[in-house]
Image (cartoon, rainbow, N blue to C red; front, side, top):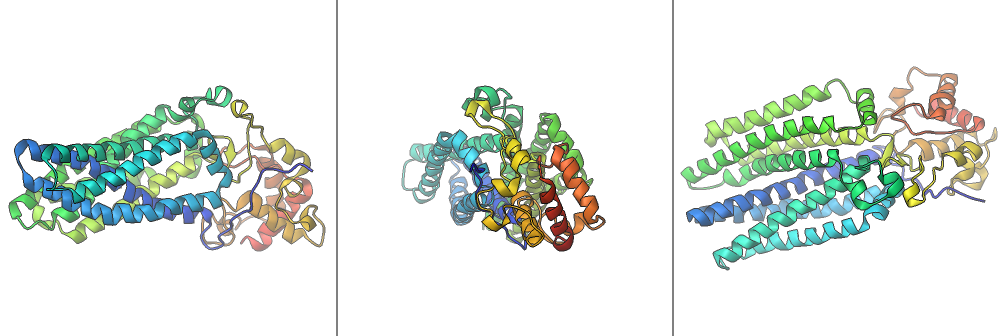
Amino acid sequence: MEFLGMYPTWHDTLLGSGWVLGIIAVVHVLASHVSVGAALVFAWLATAAYRRRRPELLEYVRRYGVLLLVFSYVVGSITGPGIWYSATVASPRGISALIHSYVWIWATEWVFFVGEVVGIYALVYLANKVDQKTHLKLTLFFAIASWCTMLIIVGILSFMMWPGQPEWFTQGGTLNGFYGPYTFGQIITRTAFMLVAAAVVGGIVASRIDDTAFRQEMTRKLAVLGIVAAVVGFFAFQWTLTTLPEHARTVMAALLPDWFVPSLWAVLIVTVAYFALTWALPRVLTPWLSVGMAAVLLVFGIWPEETARESMRKPWVAGQYVYSNQVIGRDVPALRIRSEVPMLEQRGMLASHPFIPANLRRVTEENTSQAGYALYLAYCSNCHNLGKTGIRPFGKKLADMDEEGLYGYLTGALASGSLPYMPHMPLKEDEARALARFLIQEGR
C-alpha cells in the first residue's frame, strides 16, 4: 500500500511546537543580530582607531568582543542547534525541503560561521599582540564573515516564504529560488536592525567606561548610529512590504491584528527616543538601561516581526509547496515533486499516513474519538493547540461553534482549499465527522 512520506508528529500540549520553536528562535535572532551588527561596528571603530591613533577605541572593541563571546557566541551557539532540533521534529518535511534545495548554501554559511567564530576569538585575544595592520585585517575579516552569514540565511528564509522567482517551480535553479525583491528588502532591513541591536548592547560596554569624556563620546556615537539605523530600517521594512506577493497581502489582512502597524510605529518612536535621550544626556546610560532596552527590542521588536513573517507564509512552511501540516500541497516539476492532495482526496489521511495505528485506519463507532485525535495531530497540531493556551488555541476559535457547524466548515472551506491561510485539507466524510466531534468535545 502506498503511503505519504510523513513523519511522526511532535505534539507539545502546553505551548505547541510553533511556540517552542519561536521562543528559541527569537532569543537566537537577538544574539545573532547583535553579533553581526557589532562586527560591522568593530570594523568602523578599528579603522577610525588606526587612522586617528585612538587606542581607546580599540580597547572598547576588545571589551565589546568579550561581551559578544559570552552573549552571542554562547547563547547563540546553544539556541542555534536548538532551532535545528526543534524545527526538525516540528517540521521535518519543511527542513527537508530547505536542505534538499540548499544543502551547499547551508554548507557555505557554516564555512562563514566558522570564520566568524575564529575571527571574534582572534580579535579579542590577539588585541595588542599583533601589529596594527594584521589586527585591522582580522577585524575586517570578522565583519565580512559575519555579514555573509546573514546574507545567506536571509536568502534561505526568503525561500521559506516563497521562491524568489516563479520560474523556480518549473525550471529549478538555486538562484531562482534564492533571490527576489523580498530578499533584498530583508537584507537591508535586517542589516539596519542589526546595527540598532549592536548600538543598544554596545551601551552596556560604553556605560562602564571609566573615562568620563570617552564614555560620553562612545554613548553619543552609538546613539547616532542607532537613530540612523532605526530610521533606515523602518523605511526599508515599509519598502519590503511592497515586494510581498498578493497572497501574502491577503494573509496579512486576514491574520495580523489591527495593532500590528501601530506597534511598529511605537517601537520606532521608543527606539529613537532612547537614543535621543542617551545622546542628549550620556550620563543616564547605565548597564541596566541598556539591558532593559535590549529586552524591549526582543519582546516588542523581534517577536512581532518574526510572528508577522511566519504568518505571511501561511499556509505553507517552505517554498510554497510544503504545507504547515507537512503535506505536499502542489506540484514542483523541477524537483519531480507531486502534490499529495489527490491521494488524500481519494483515500483520506487515516489510510495514507504511515504512522496512524492499524486500528484507526477506518473510522468506527468504537474509535471515533481516537480517530479524531489522530486527525487533529496530523492535520492541525502544527498550528493549533487544544484548550485555551498555546498557539492559536481551538478553545477560543471554536467557542461559538457546534459539531454540525464545524463539520460543514471542514467539508466546505477546508476541503475545497479556498481559504488563503489554511492548507487544502481533503477529508473523507467519516474523517470529517470524527475530527469535528473530537474538536468540539475535547478541543475546547
